Image 1 (tube, rainbow over the protein chains, first blue to last red):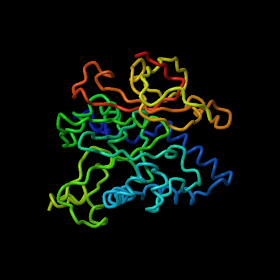
Image 2 (tube, helix red, strand yellow):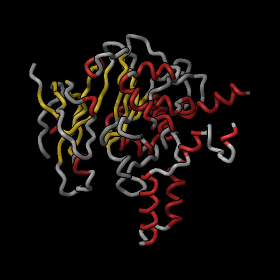
Image 3 (cartoon, helix red, strand yellow):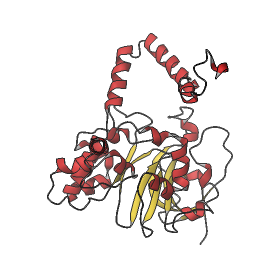
Length: 231
Length: 98
């Protein structure tokens, strides 16, 4: 106790670690400042882009899946050419630059879950993620723990998410280690017969499109179900 | 466009090449045998793209390779049918007979 006088960080390692600025952050800041000085873009452009990127959620993906569940012809188009089919729900992978961002674009593939195969996504290199359809990746998706364990012990990791898959299903892990970006198309759950696309989209949560959860008719969104539990 | 050397269904082994700088071919698939399940378009390989050689970099066809998890990890704790897919450019692959 006594020796901690004047040192508020003792015993609070988490805060100390998070306050450190990484080399990459410094590099980004330096390049950004240079670009602003050179007039390539303005600080306001940068702020607007950051807001645009961070505001993106998984709604585009939910819409894609709901539409595919409702319209077999669309589902076929989506599986055959993900980038083109996305345009039908207003998602253009080439935006905002006209060529996409180097880390997001260029090939988008939708992986269809079947009674035999369950797909799940990971990027062992860093954090490749289909941002135009799912928004920013969750924090856990970028952790070394998820990345190294999902390829090696996928069933244990899925169980930690509460997903226990039967022994006769093939768990297929997709390492997004190159140019392709993936999204999982979960199977339409029971109890959703006759639902509209809007109703269906509400149960297609982010995690079901990463492959760490399955959609359920009684779970409209992960955040929503948590709110109900707390209530 | 170069004609892809490997066809869907071909068995391939991932080479364990020296990588001094950037690569996207992960260590855990090297020396392992998998099956080509899909072709991907030709693209500048990551080893050159990392240096921003988008015009002059080497272009190669890419492949999706499916591995049995039990072939990747001798101590795999899941089930025999579990698989993993990764992508690699052609020069990382060598054919496996049989």
